[in-house]
Image (cartoon, rainbow, N blue to C red; front, side, top):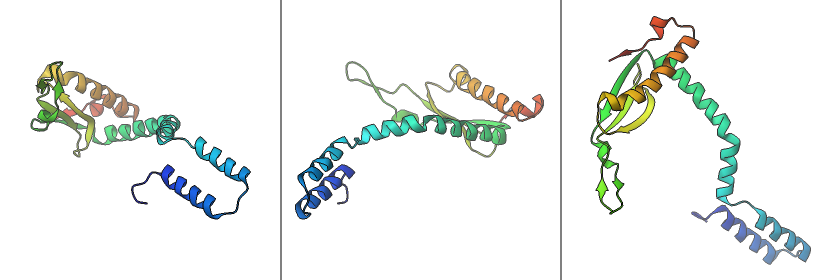
Length: 158
């Protein structure tokens, strides 16, 4: 039964139950109706996403704020050039294009990644500025909200 979906397993159990148990036709009909109404995995995934999206977003925001408060004192920009070439786009004529030359990560004091890795076309100020601006605004807001002075809340770059 390894590798089978839950629905397949339930179908096998139901068939075995119907084959070996003396049951009334009404019970069989009720079981079949129940089986038809079991939600598919895609529906269950959507329900879970809908139910837990706000909770997960609030937990992620709290963890990010804690990381910015703890590790936001010094920032280090780190670019990776070899992995960026693995991102491939296809044009309308099925021609491969590698649009990015760098994967940019911004690390904190302890080496924690403070911002998700972003593919950029080149490691130049015009590409880095929007990513860094968003992070610095969040860092200032978090550190000032925690009671640090302006000079303490300002991160340094290494």
